[in-house]
Amino acid sequence: MIPTRYRSSVFLKAAMAVTGAVMVLFLIMHMVGNLKAFEGQESFDAYSHWLRVVGYPAVPEGGLLWAIRIALTVSVVVHIASATVLALRARRARPQRYQTRKRVRQSYASRTMRWGGVIIAVFVLYHILHLTVNVIAPGGASDSPYERLVNGFQQPLVAVFYIVSLLLVGLHLQHGLWSVFATLGASSGRREPLLRGGATALSVLLIAGFMLVPVSVMIGWVS
Image 1 (cartoon, rainbow, N blue to C red):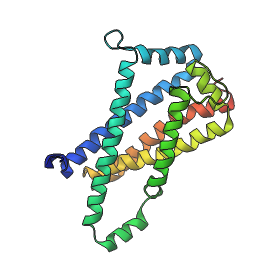
Image 2: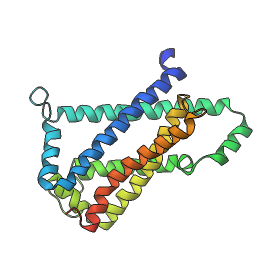
Image 3: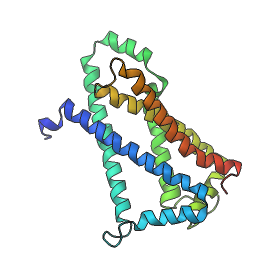
Image 4: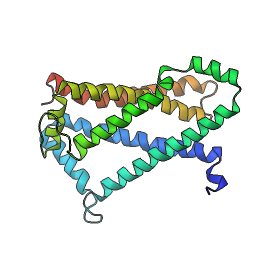
C-alpha cells in the first residue's frame, strides 16, 4: 500500500518537476558530449573512455556511468507514472464537454504523444544497442565509439531514422516542459508566453545540437 502522502497531487507534481529536471540535465550533458565528434576521433574516444573510468578507483570502473543510467531510468519511470496519475485525475475531474473542446485545441505534439512515445522507445533501445553496448553495427563493427558513430551515420537509413526520432523527441520535450510548467501552476497570466517560448527554445537548441552530428556525418563534415 502506497502511503497517502506519496499519492497526493502536490507530491506527484514535485516528482514530475524534479525528474523532468534530471532528464533535461542529462540531455544537455549528452548533447555536449556528442559535439566532441567535431574534435576528431582521438578526442571523442578519449571522452568516451573518461566516462567509463571517472571516479576510479574510488568507485569501480564504469560505476559512476551506471549510477547515472540507473538514476535516469528511475527518473523516467517516476516521471511517466506521476504524469499518468495526474492526467487521469484531471480527466475524471473535467466535464465531458470541456474534454471535447480541449481535445480540439490540443497541439500536434500533445495529440501524438502516445505513438511518438512508442517510436522514441524503439529509438532509445536501438541507440543503446548501436552506440552503447555495440551489439548492432551498421556500416561495420568497431571498438572505437567514434568509428561506430561515423559508420552508422554514413548509412542513410540509420541517419534518417535518428533525425526523425530526434524531431519526435523535440516535440515531446517541448510539450513535456510546457506540461510541467502548467502542472506546477506556473503557466498562468503574463508568464505563459515567456515560459512557452523558453520551453520551445530549449527544445530546439537541444535537438539541433543532437541532429548536428548525424547531419554532419551525412554531408562529410565529420568522417
